Amino acid sequence: MTLKRFFENALRCTVPLLSMATLGPLGAGAALAADAQPRDFMPAPAGTHLGLLYYLHGSSDTFVDSNGDEVPGSGLDTNIGIARYVYFFDVGDMRADINVVQPFGGLSDMSIGGAPLASDDFSLGDTSIVATFWPLNDPENNRYFAVATYLTLPTGEYDPNVASLGSNRWAVTVQPAYYFNIAPKWSVDVVGDVTIYGDNDDGPGGITIEKDPNFTALSWLNYHASDATTVSFGVSTTWGGEETWGGVDRGDSQVTTLRLAWSQMLNPTTQLVTELSTDVDAENTFKRDFGALLRLAKFF
Image (tube, rainbow, N blue to C red; front, side, top):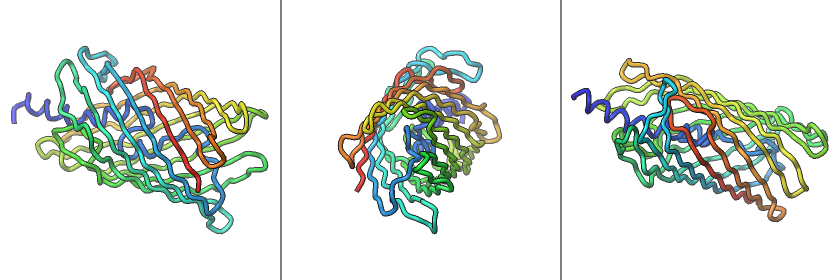
């Protein structure tokens, strides 16, 4: 294999992983599952079922290399859906849930340095199975502390030469979160996570791709305009996840994202969340100019 051919294949395989980082906390596999919208860690009563549908759009015309320099002629558009099911129950005196997350969608108009890259307009992503426990569940004082654990399976569609939502590796994410009031109409979410990855043993040319742990910190400041309406301002940052391609290190990635969300209860059992976001800093990845999320949740 020539050096040029190896580099082209490496770019095609790298793009799905890089492009997921540009979605802020919502990316491929484990990252998609582990995102959090405002007040997500307020548990529902035991016995409650919850169905959620997400739509995420992201657009970028900037790729930032590992030196922090923009690479001209680069771009990426993402259109991703997520189907999610959650069931709440009690383990002794502790609230818990179990949920399943299935992403799907496509990547398009992908290029780096003016070179178009092959992508899949529609593919299934990696399925995640999630268990959450609430050691602190204090509705009287509106305080909640939860720890969620995500197991992401390599079930998504994958081709080392075509960008898609599958990552061809196992991943485990641990995500603690704390929600509390700071004033009668104001509350805060503080969420962090670490993701540990297995190896992708089918990289370009059959090489093994190793990936270091990836970290995310997220905070939301929420204003409760009414019992039905919440407006939230958030900031998140993701870093780490350096990949090693056949023994060659390729550098860490980093993204910082500003987020604005509106949450509305349409009726007592239906919620709509709208979120807008933009990346204000990025390194070794695409820098997203515009992101949008719509989420419809139904309790039953």
